[in-house]
Length: 424
Image: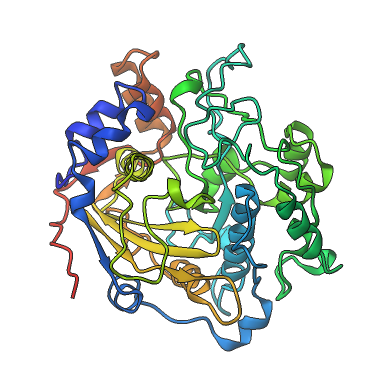
């Protein structure tokens, strides 16, 4: 990533002028992103870059544990499993006795709860006319109407036609679907849902330029005042508007979907179901790290850089956490503007593999500054935003950005100095 501390690197400027998907080679070329990534042990990452408490034993029975995802070929099912895992963890963090509840907190409080959602198909609501050409979706992620989507792993799950996947979904149905939510039971309900390879979510993106819309798979958000207006998709709305054919699939997914707002996302989670199209290796061999020896690997690395650039371009951040997932394995990532650390891969989601649970528990116990938000920036209120809007033509992308970003600065002091990343 760029070493510029003010967020105005050449790549950030370019992304406001050109289609983002055309810029993926820039992140692995001009920025030479692969040379700014360093792999570290999981133990070192957790100790030095994600310090915090472990989950109290009293909560372990309340956590959600995932089914075997090693053979899962439906990306949305992995997205949903991660959301349920994360939200089961963060829901355990209650307001201590004697403190005010979250609903009484001020707008700028550090103590809003966090929520994790599948945001792979929806962009924020925008005050622009919806594109009338419903077929213009070749840039839409995971869309049943966009077979050439650049953001999907396997061409929108078009390859999910093998009988083995259907057999896996059937075999994992243990009859406990009704009791699976926020319990120690596995994802029986998700696996029991339809495995129709064509039953994928078509985009409901309201952007005026669908070709350049870009969305990460899963995001962590503050459940604050903006969440309801910008990110949240009520279950009833999802059930009514989703183009998934199976009602069972929609029921599984309805409580875990939201809109990909780059101005609001706190942590990014990218999910892959095809190892060839992953930016990283996920084997136990520590000598295998980046998949930059193939075009697909370089493309995936550029995609990751694009997502990180989106957050740094829309928010005033000093650093950013992310998770990169391949089926039942994951890597933790820590980005600063000058580079990033990546943990070695680990298995997640079971009672014996609590690393990802611990990750979300520590996130839930962090302040905004610990999560990477620049403490020298004061969020603008509605009146300040109105004063800024007349300066720019209403049709420019920068005008839209100012209208929707919660962190447009009214005043700003010099940012804190970013030290070099330590790797030992």
